[in-house]
Amino acid sequence: MSNRFTRSFTALAEHIDVMGHVNNTVWLQWVQDIATAHWQSVAPPAHQAAYAWVVTRHEIDYRGNIAEGDTVEAETWIPGPAKGARFERCVSFRDHTGRVIVEARTSWAMIDLATRRLMRVPDEVSAPFLQE
Image (cartoon, rainbow, N blue to C red; front, top):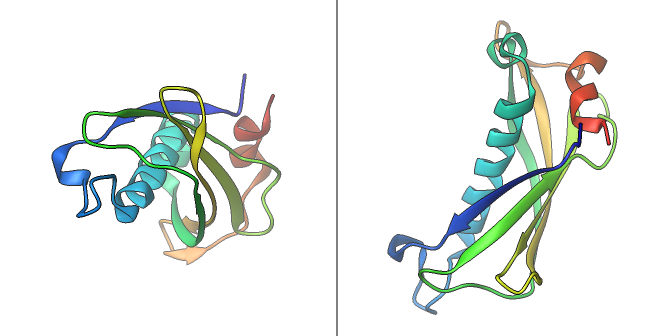
């Protein structure tokens, strides 16, 4: 099993800013969307019912952009083991030529839904995301 997950995003009219390309807040939404989809595709239902993730930090590098109607291929992965309650996540967006145009490194903290408190990421939760 790979720890990488991919998804395509297409820029719609509502994603475009006054500069004629995808607005920065949309890139952030897409980072969250692919992270959530990755969690939902890998984590077993019991983990999804017991835990949630909240963003603690976003770091984004913009090297290009896309216009309305253009599609990017997004890829996300977990670069290493959890550190306490936190997991680092990487996301890259490639344009139609395969060039990386946006990269993000984000930090997420695990919440126990029963207590609504931060908790250390259990090994059994992180293991499926770390396999190569």
